[in-house]
Image (cartoon, rainbow, N blue to C red; front, top):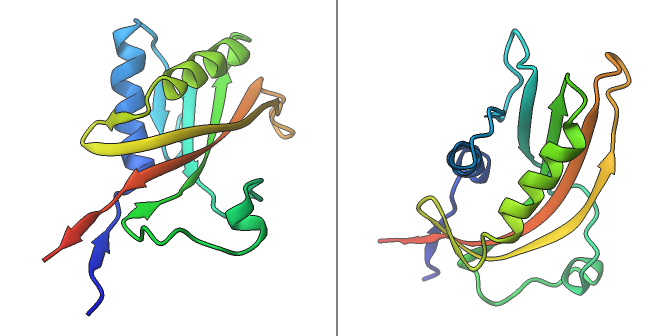
Length: 145
């Protein structure tokens, strides 16, 4: 019988982790998975988006690792700052994530963080400054009894 693996909610894991890490460097950005109403002036929005194309051989050739306990979420982080410092916030978030692996993101073990890029992505509706980071993670699930 195959093992049942429970994978973490990576969005909530990163919201909690980034909130703690940003507070540790006295940054006031609000980290969310859904935009609040009213929208915070300085914010990081975390969303899982596995539909964005990957660049690694496993995905190009449709192969997956035999280690089924691993999850490979692709995460998009939208960094906004109404004061114009969205690029600085994105760079800070990027540095926090780059230094996170191997290690724990809160209670979740992360084997690897692969930076897939950062872009200036000004909001087309509001013209608010926004930078988007795309990151691939390899995190471990938990075997259910």
